[in-house]
Length: 381
Image 1 (spheres, rainbow, N blue to C red):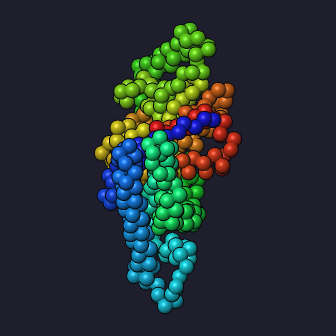
Image 2 (cartoon, rainbow, N blue to C red):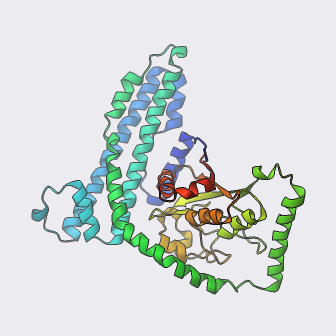
Image 3 (cartoon, rainbow, N blue to C red):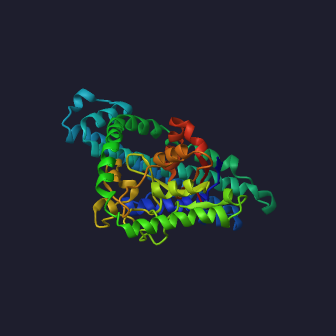
C-alpha cells in the first residue's frame, strides 16, 4: 500500500470552505500560503504574520472550547434538570459521560461533531505554524536571516490550542457511548438492503435495457482481452469503477457504486479508484460530491441535499441512487475486492480537508487488517 503526500495549503483551504458552508461559523485557519509568501520579504514581516496567526488561533480555540463547555453544563443543569449541588466541581470526563446519558442522541451527536471540528482546526493550525517555521529556516542561511526555530517553536508549543490532544479522550468517550446505536444500525442493514433490492431489482428489467447492459460488459471484457497488452493492464485504473460519466445511462453502473467496482474487477481490471467521505456517525462511505443530489433517485429528498458529513448511516441506507442501489460503505467495497480476490484492489482518494476520514480509515484497517492488502494506494492532493 502506498501513500501520497498532500498539499497542506490546499487542505487548509478546503477545510475552511467546507466548515464555513456547513456550520455558518468560520473557524480561524492559519493563512498558510499568505504567510509563506512573507518568507521572501523579510524576517520581520514573516515573524509578525506568524505571531498574529498564532494569537488568532489561540483566541479562537479558547473561545470555542469555552462555548463547548458552556453548552455541556447548560444542557446538564438547565435542560435536563440535574441538581448542580449534587454535581459540583464535576470532572470533564464525567461531565461528558453524564451529558450523553441524560441528553438526547441528537444532542450527543452534535456535541461529538463540535468537538471533532475544534480538534481538526487546532491540529491543522499546529501543523501549519510548525511547517511555516521549518520552511523559513530552510533558506535562512542563504537569505542571511536568523533561524527562528528556537524562538517561535516554544511560543507555538506553549499556545492554548496545543492542548487539543486532550480532546481526543473526549472524542473516544463519545464514540464509545454512541457505539451501541451504530451497532444496532449495522445489524439492521442486511434486512433493509434486502427490502431495497426486492423493490428495485425488477424495476429496470426491460429486455432492451438488459441487452444494452450486457453489450457494455461484453465490450469491456473484449477490450481488455484483445486491445490492451497484458503488461499495461496492471497500470489501468477504473475511475470510480466502470460507469457512465454522464450519470444517466442505463447501460453501465452508476459511479462509486458497488456494481461499478465489481464489474471492473470481474472483467480483469486490477485497480479501481474511489472517493471516500465520513458520515456524521463516522462511517466511511463512497462519495465524490459534497452531497448525493446528482446521483439520487429523488434529488428533492432532504437526505439527497444534505452534505455527506451531516448524514447518518441510517440516512445513507434510506438514500436510493438512480440505479436502485444505495451509497456503499468503503467496507462493503473492500470486502467485494477480497471476495473477488486476485489483483482486485482499490485506490482510495480522501478529499482535501477531510482529516477525520484519515483517522477513520486507520481505525477500519486496525479492525479489519485482512483488508489492507485490498488497498493499493491512499492519496490526497
